[in-house]
Image 1 (cartoon, rainbow, N blue to C red):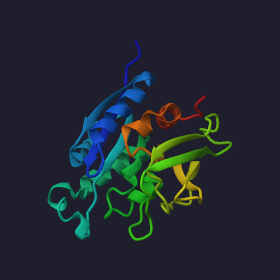
Image 2 (cartoon, one colour):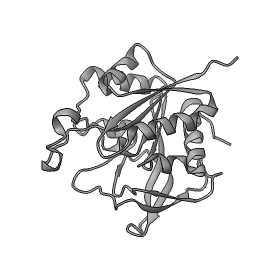
Image 3 (cartoon, helix red, strand yellow):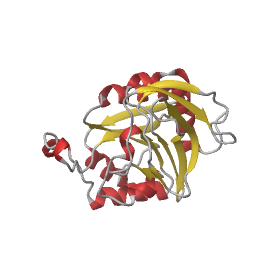
Length: 232
């Protein structure tokens, strides 16, 4: 019997039901033989990669410095800055062949860690990045990429806009909506040393993740991150 692939989901934060979306992600990836564990302590989860690496790491969290009056009620309990040991553990995990899947708010995480952009392949920039309210978002798959076998689809989600991408990031899919008619990169991939990274800017809730085409996209993306090659 084939040994299950280990999957650590780092979850938590404000304004989203991370428990439901993390459970949805675990269920979506289970048919690939991926066994998921949800961890709410991001510091412990990241630092633990040094001693106990996993086959796939997902970040489904909204944890950052929370600067600004809007976040005053949440800062004491939810603001997060990864320690140097946590940062080093994640960097080593990726450069030596780890697999990372970032979901939705992962691009906002770790706002005081400049290298996070080069690890994830891009990030949210305070003062310029933004998103319309949740609405129908139509996703177009880029041709001649690892996901080009998938059809276009529409989900009800937040369309993250004006994210900053690294030059070596490969965009796999773009999204448009009524409030944002300029195509925005919503799925991308890139490599960090021997490691493979996929970011999915969608995933505001479990309903978006469970859309049949979105779910298949996540399975294919995870498969590429863990095994390489092109999904079929």
